[in-house]
Length: 185
Image 1 (cartoon, rainbow, N blue to C red):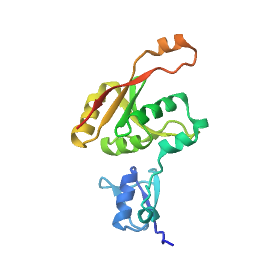
Image 2 (cartoon, rainbow, N blue to C red; image 1 turned 120 degrees about the vertical axis):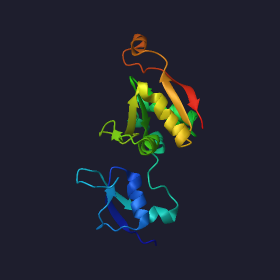
Image 3 (tube, rainbow, N blue to C red; image 1 turned 180 degrees about the horizontal axis):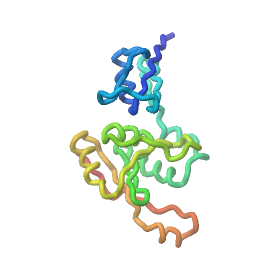
Image 4 (cartoon, rainbow, N blue to C red; image 1 turned 90 degrees about the horizontal axis):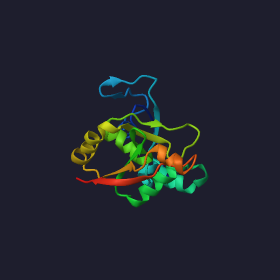
């Protein structure tokens, strides 16, 4: 039986909570992010160290959970998962209207690497709920940061038809998206 030590860290970033936990700072210590004290408005992450001994991941795999829970998957999320299965070794950048978005594990990683706000699409479902993104015009600078500075492969999935042409095919038809470019280090 492994002993569990719980450390409560308030932070904007779960990676900071993990880093703090690994350093052994207790829950009574003051923790700051970027040299500023943490306010109560920031998220609270409770890090459990038992995963270190088991070799498991500290963050659940949302893509695997989404596939197991197919009833809760929206058509767009199903489309995202299909493209993600085609390019499992890449971070998938998914065009949604005038924005590019990351979902699930890719969103957590992109938020950390690019200093983007990690948010949730909806609070009703837990399937690939976390996301982060940026406007279409910023794609080149963000992809360059991921590829050149962090050595990450990025698959860029664009909408290959307009929303109006998708509506002509049917009322609630999903816009077709295809991977049009893969950026590698």
